[in-house]
Length: 324
Image 1 (cartoon, one colour):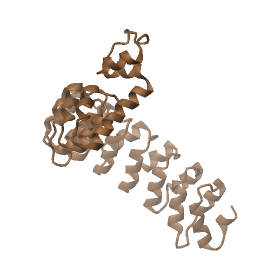
Image 2: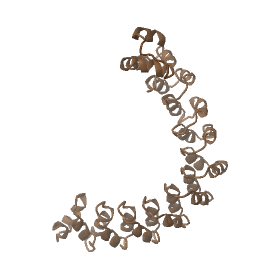
Image 3: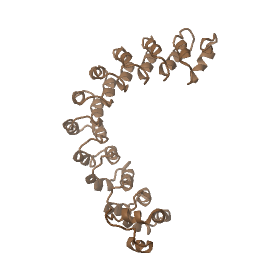
Image 4: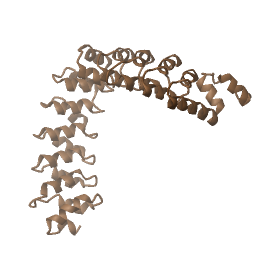
């Protein structure tokens, strides 16, 4: 507390490196005005997670827009203060309000009509933005705003299809990330001409099985190898696809097949004869590790043995013969 009032501005400036400052010291530093570091010090206080509400309210009227933006971005800032900052004359401040998790819903809705696209983008990103607002933003003049609507989990399905049909690359890029996108839409996007779109599809946890064959043969110049490797690592990739990937020209793809979590014996059998010694060793290691940890579970998982089939009575030697 005493150091926050020290006459040496260098001492006061050094305090901003201390994340454990008491609240009364933060309140004092929030009034810093005359030193060369005054703005930096007030901005530090505005960002501090322990800043008192009265201090944040004071700084929300700061003459420096960077300080006000810091208040708007502070997770501890009260919704009533955010409501006031939503009417700030600086875009950067309103942008932070639109991103804030605790911004009141009416304030968020109002910011959806902001004159600056970055603010509307933040609204389109916000997890609490309602479907009707997303529908309005899907008609926005800015492609970036429409793209973020395409990634939003609450965007109506008809909106997602309309955004897809406008055929804008940036919009399709975001649509491919949407975990609530319909399976048939993601399947279409798995054939997209843009390999970055296809990369987003293969990394989408809602990826439909129908998209796997196309992605397993992806030949994109930059992302193709990575896309095929991602398919190889998926637990639900069919054995038939994995056997194809086991003969892939890319070392990385074959290595992914050899080291995947869910063991697939047919593809590993192919890799045991791979031209590369490291791949052969990796395949052998995967088989041996799985068998050592739990031979019964290994057989059940790798051969898709139904749960109602009891394997507990089979000797290890019999199970090993069953595998091969």
